[in-house]
Length: 499
Image: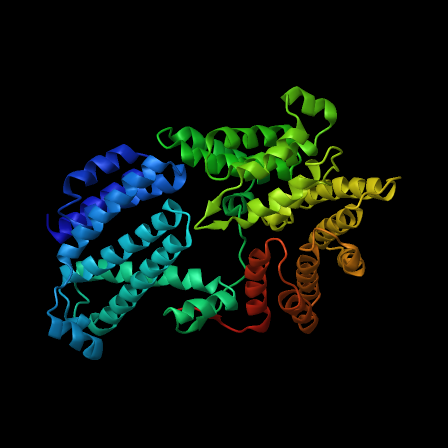
């Protein structure tokens, strides 16, 4: 199996995967997985992807064994240095003397290391595994940097070689992926990464959505939400070999129905996720309960569900990843605790709050009719809070949540002065908030974006930096810092750290 043939066969395997023919791709790659670096990389990549989607222990173990074999296969093709050569290469950068096969072995090895790091993070949920995974990521990064050096030194000499162009493309993909990942990280995380070896120039990126990306793209096409739903249904029907891909579609379909307040249909997809997916039982349970909370009592009864009991189950479903709790699960657990006492205090528009957590309002805001519908629901909740004869201890928190969500809708509808009043009302009762302290820094961030929309850049920066510098230890803090990082980079025109 020579390099040219292995590249051609792996391209065929990739096309099979993209056409939902996963078993055929594995059958093509497996016979040569211990002899060819690209077959080894391709075979392990498919199994790692499957393990990441299923979260099943047996799949993770199978993928880990395969990736170890792949690393050994790639290692056989890497350049072997003597002790003297290894020392001198640190000084003279002799990596530019690699043969084509050795070049490709380096990027295959680097990619396999990244895959092993991913599995390491999820295989053992402790800090040692987290550190081991981090070391593998750093080693992969260093290999890509060396490969970039090879490209820079040899691109004119080898410019007519097809294998070199393949190598160059692989290097640029790897370096670009690292650049993109690091460009999205806040400064405090970047400082830690620089300590272990990540450094370099800075690039500028626009703010990005944290989730529901597919829906965002599809909704821009004619047909809006109804068009998105059709595409996801077609995706589900296209293959039944990997059910986990269906779960991605269920998640997006659930949100598409939530955006249009079709709560019963949204609940059905939340229920499918709860029953079939292992990714986050706590989030799926909370999502089910939150959606049911938006429905009339008579509709809830038709589902046979008990909303209070669903909320009470959330905390027991919380999991840990790399020894740490998942922030979104922690948020869901905190919100669910309202229902743990003998006299539960109902959450106010919990499905709309989760919509905001997953950055859904940036998607909804593209459709004025959908945004108007959400605004009507929020104003009804506002009226109920105002008329509550016996306000609970959660009342100020609920008021702030409703005002923030109302402000978001008004902002997307272009009613900026009214939106500003809603946001400033949240800030005015900051000291009365008892539990949902995240609402203040998030509101400062949204108010900053509003001032940016009005053209007052200096004021926008001031409010967003206030959220960044003066608040800590609140729910989903890191998530907001990611958004702040992107917004300030855009506002100031200053670059963002990347390798």
